[in-house]
Image 1 (cartoon, one colour):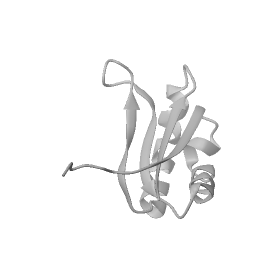
Image 2 (image 1 turned 180 degrees about the vertical axis):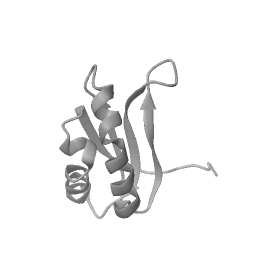
Image 3 (image 1 turned 90 degrees about the horizontal axis):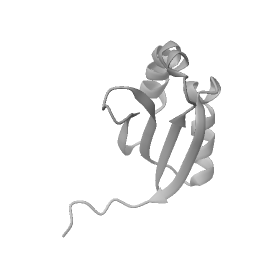
Image 4 (image 1 turned 60 degrees about the vertical axis):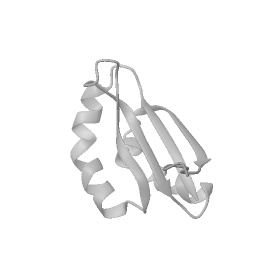
Length: 94
């Protein structure tokens, strides 16, 4: 099942994101399930990091929660909020 995971950073925590980023990238490469999308979310300027967005394939929502709990940004307490919802890719439209 595809799970959309949107993680928003706590305000004024860019330093923590940048300090944790090397561990995050190594972890993602070693632990990424199949999916559609992995990438940062930005502020309105299109450059300032504000969070992370994942759309990945998990067995169920519990597996997605367990995966996020091991994520270095999550462990560093970077996120103000984490929203997870099952989703479905309907693109390309037929």
